[in-house]
Amino acid sequence: MKQKLLVATTNKGKLVEIHHFFDDLSVDIITLSDLDQDIVAPEETGSTIQENAMLKARYYAEKTGFLTLADDSGLFVDALDGWPGVKSARVGETSKVQCDTLLSKLEGVSGDDRTAQFRVCLALYNPNELTFFTTFGETMGRIIEEAVESGVITAYGYNRLFFVEKDDRYIEATGKTYAEMSLQEKNSVSHRGKALIKMKYHIADITSPKHIILANGILFRDGKILINKRNDPHNPDFHGKWEFPGGAVDYGETIEENLVREVWEEAGYNVSIVASLGKIYVNQREKGDEQLLHRYQLYIIPHLCTVESGDGVISDNEVLESRWVTVKELVEYDFIDSKERMVEMVQLIEKKITEHNL
Image (cartoon, rainbow, N blue to C red; front, top):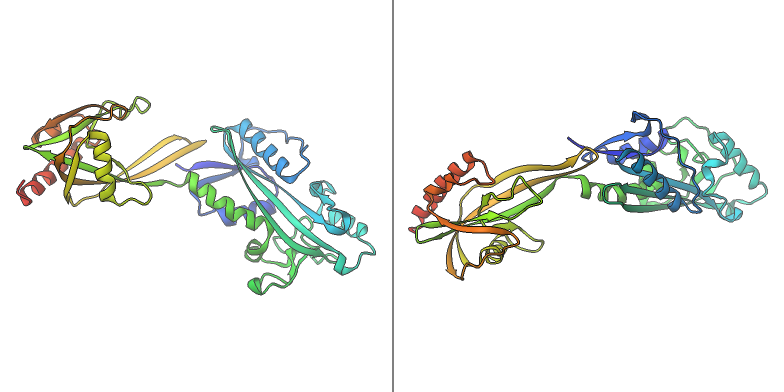
């Protein structure tokens, strides 16, 4: 199941551009037209594009419960002191009206003075955590004196008037208006493309499955193995079940460094690593629902270890109880891992103990 991302717009041109960027994300993109309810659009009362983008994102997220992306953009014309700016979409209901109105206001203004910027703010609102994430994009250009003919997918709004000067970095995409660009060309240089790529990285970070490496220590001493009963009252699936000491590898740590540190913190023993059991176990876990889903893929790497020193003082915030048990007794305990996996692990542990004459 993918987490749903509500894109709060009915503008088909914007949706095409957003899908172009987001189609490979681990989200299910839905739009306002996909909802079972009719939601009256909010009044855009912000004085900036950022205020309006955030207003819309929070409004629709609170109405639906979905992670919501909204945007606001504007064309800021220097000779008109930034007009139409935040009011760009409200100049007229059609692209023709918008373009004609702008051209009439620029009548008599020479080409060198017809500079302008397209700006956008994207706002992502998480209704569960009550948090915003915003990105911005801007593209410099100028307003030509006559709108180009339409006929391509990007020819909406003021796109038929906004000309982007030639740029050697983007030879194919520049030296033309937004309307004359292909979707791929426009996304490479446009204000929205610049903001979308930054937003894409953030959405990928919060919605893609997290890949977590866990190092487990199989502590062997005097013919017995150390096991811990987990203290995790907020996670009833794991609380009170047995496991081997260990934890997630931190950034900048090796697996071996992590294992030694985690065993000391959880179990109070300094250990030497003898060998990996030779198998990596993979678990998939999900928390939440389609409105806010967290997915994890855990790579569990168990290592056989011997105890060098320590008094075995446990971390009571993580461990309820510790026990030393024989290898055969492991399958008698209620582990987080399945019974089948524990049977297999017992076989691997016995094999490694024999191989290393422990």
